[in-house]
Image (cartoon, rainbow, N blue to C red):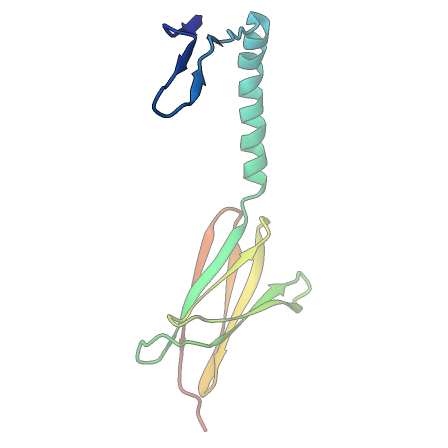
Length: 154
């Protein structure tokens, strides 16, 4: 498509301002882009393969989440409670993996590898008895663990 802009006079002289203004003819062109039908067919054939590969890749990355809340005996959330995530080995040994602190609402969360595995979660806070619970992590799932800590006996 070609568009041309023209003016009636190629040069105008203004007598009051004493300036010279010139106008030029300008061609406006648009470029037509074409696509090769073979490329388009190849794209449609490879698109499902790419989507399947992306879907499998995403499945591999789904980690398990161990989350929960720590309460004290009357039911109030415990902010600042220490949470330890322990790995339970086949020989019965516990290996400390991570340590965290609960937020203002008493909540915590750990992201663990996407492998079915046994974990122990231990909650402790100053002036309260510590408590330990066991859970099994499942890939792509969230395991909720709730603690109700009782006052420590002197």
